[in-house]
Each structure stands twice: as structure tokens, then as C-alpha cells.
Image (cartoon, rainbow, N blue to C red; front, side, top):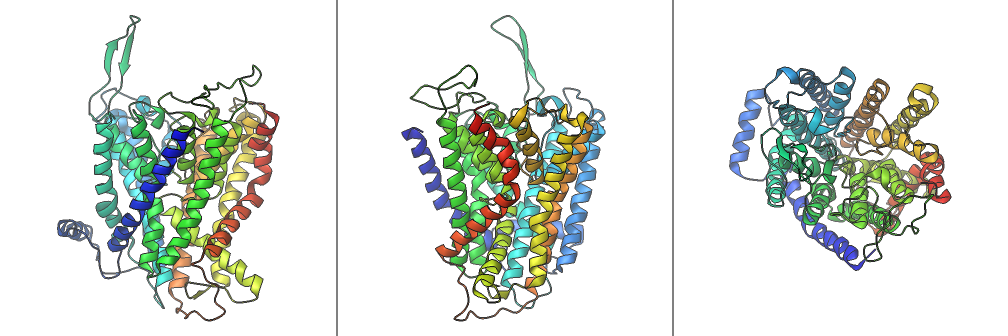
Length: 569
């Protein structure tokens, strides 16, 4: 790593330290119990939308009604997007005359974008029409992120309220997340990307003559608008198949830096919003620092392993940059050096974004292992928009339960007793995802027909399979490219794992919100374990790492760890 790498990382941290608390304060006003803050014209617009939809914005829902609304909205979204993909050849807004997607690929893509995963078993510019990208994929980039924020806010209300049967209104939380947070930020970031040269038009491909005398068709489209929300909403689905490694999506070093900042901004802001909403800012800081330390450790580790590689050997086959730049250049565009590639990879896998500025399959085994482990953590460092906060809060509940067992006291968190009901739900939350991921991966490596999709032998081939299901299960969307996953088996299996990874976690989180919200707040006593201290942040980090390590260490040992130690990459 060079001095410029450290300077870039330092500037990113400073900007996050400035803007995350400010945005967190604003988010807290959007979802304040006394009513949302913000311009009056937005309130009038929302009132008209609620009236049109027959929604009483002042009524609230129990956790069950909240969950039913969420599932109904998501189910209809899947059906709409599936139909759009299947009918795109008959619809306007298709200047390249692209054909309809196959049923298996269409359902995989529909579930992927609705669950905020944005896993892409296709190349964007040669598969999706402009209308499908705009009316389908870009819309889901907004609403899927808003769904995650809504669940996080519902859990915060459950922790903050006393003897309450309700946790908010899903439709109101969904709408306000979009109108007051995601759209304004997306507009600002779109303008920034356009200023850097990111494409934004509605034209078909332009065909030009090359210097060599050939003919090349250069695709266009509404790229900047989709790029902005794909990062701010931790979605990750790129307009082009190369994602943020494509110069039309990420043309300069400044745009690359801005994209990393954008994908980290809202996830790091939500702990500050949490602290303000419960009236205990130190509690929010404890969650923030746990997230930050995990992210910083993974980012610096990935940058180190990606820049400190052995000299080029014929049997290894890794391109090594000069000493001035340093690191593995394979799969890395020269606009984005190896350290920036690794920082992007660690940030995108830590936030469930899934956007890629370089080929993750070409990362060194250790750097690729860091990206894989980030997703295995449940992406709570700092996690996806909304999902990172509610995931870390559930880890916090587990942490106080473990601490309570150690000292022989009934565990409490924010004045709420953590009892059997909450721990059963937290156990479901923690176990359902690794079970589905590991079972699906085991089937994929055992069946002869699915093994044929693995293009690389040995440990790296296993890493590719594990990465695909960990990425889809944790709603990330990035991939190791050496896997032919556009098959009926992978399309259907990944869709199931994505749905489990999204709703199999959201429903227990909402149930915990309902259970805690119904309890009375107990004043802190002399024996209350403080949860707003550096010690609790350290315990929280330890619980996250140990629970994940115990679950996934065997497969990590057979995959990236074995590949790193043997040097067979």
C-alpha cells in the first residue's frame, strides 16, 4: 500500500465521520414519533399518495400486519417485474429489439432485485431493454432499499416504546423512505456522476468505425440514474455487465471514490438515527463503532492482501504491478489501482451492495476470502440499507443474553428484558440463512450436472460455489465469475436462497420488534450491564465474529484459506 492509498482511506473516513451523523439526524426526524420533518410540499405529496391508495397515515400496525403488508408488496413486485422481463420484446422502450428472458432467469432476476440482492446471471446491456431497466430494475432499487429501512425503523420503535402493540405503518415508512431520503440523495448523486462522465441518455447503441477498421456498437442508456440508487440503496445491480468496472458507470478515480462513499453513507448513518430515535445517542455510537471497526479491519486487510503479492511466477500467473503502485493487477482496470479495488470490494461486500469495480474472481485468495467473510458476517459491517442496522441490533440482543448468562442475571437491552421468546426468534434469525446457504452449496458440489458449471478446479472452484450462495443468501449480489450459473438449477436455487435470506430474516426481526414493543421499559439498576460503552462494542464484535466463524470456518478452510496457503491460484 502506498501513501496515496492511506490518504484516500483517511479522506473517506473523515467524510463519513462528518456526513453520517448529519444524515442520521435527518433520518431520525423523518421517522420521528411527533411526525416527519422536511419540506411541506413533500408532506402534501405524501398525503395525496396515501389518499389515492386508501392508506390512513396516522394509523399503525401490529408486527403481524406490518409483516403481511411487506410480504404482499414484495410478492406483487416479483410478479410485476417477472411479467416485464417476460414481455419486454413486445413492449416499447426496447430500441435494440432484445428478446424476452427465459422463465428461470426471469424469476431469478425478479426475486434478486425485489430482495435488494441484484444478483445478475446476465449481461445488462445485452439482455435488458431500457424500459425494463427503468420501469423494473431501477424502481426496485428504490423500493427494496426502502423496505429494508422500514424494517430497521420498526425494530427501533419496538426497542424504544413501552407497552405498545404497534410498531408503525409499513406503507407510511416505505413511502417516506423513498420521498424524503432515497430520491433526494439519488438526484444529488446522479448529478455528481454525470459531471464525471457517466452516461445518461435514452438512445440506442451508437455504431462507430474503429481505428483498426472494424465496426463497434457502443450502448447507451439511463446509466447515471440507476448507478446512483444502486449504490445509495446498497443494491449493486449495474446497467452494464461489467458493473462499476465499466467506464460508462465509473469513469474516473473521483467517481470510484464517490461510489464507495455513497454505498457506505446510509448504512453508517442509521446507527446515529437509532441513537436519536431512542433518545440515547451513546447507544447509537456503540453500534456505529462495532460496525466501523469490522469494516475498517476488513478494508485494510483486503487492501494489504491485494497489494502485497509474491513476485510473478509462471505457475501462479498473477500480474504484479510495479513497486510504485504495488499489487495484483489481474482483473483490475488501470483507472482503479489494486488498493482501490480492494477497498471497493471490502465495502461492497460489507454493505450488501454487490457492485464491483474489479473482478472479484481475480482477487488474491486472501483478499477474496475477506470479501467472502464479510458476507458471511450477515453484512453488518455496516450492512445493507436497513438490514445492517436490524442485523446488528439482533446481534446486540444475543450479546446481552450471553453477557447475562456469564454474570447470572436476566439480560436486558435498553430497559427491555431479553427472554425466551426473543432468543428463539434471534436463533431462527441466525440459523436459517447459513442452513439454506450451506445446504444449497452442498447440493451444487455433489450433483454431477451442477459440478459441470464450475470452471476452475480445486479450492478456488469450491470458493466460487460458496461465494455464489453466500452472496445470494446475504442479498449481496457480487460474484466470483468463474461459475456458469445461468442454468435452471442455479437460477431457481439462488432465487429460493435469496428469498430466505431476505424474508426469513425480516419476519423474525419484526416479531422481535413486536415482542419488545409490548414490554414495559425497566429503569436501569446497579446490576444492569451497560450497552453504551467500548466494552460492549468489543463484546458485540466478538459475538459477530465467533458466531460466524464457528458456522463457516470449515468451508472457509477448504476454500480461500487452502488456496492462499498452497499458492495454487
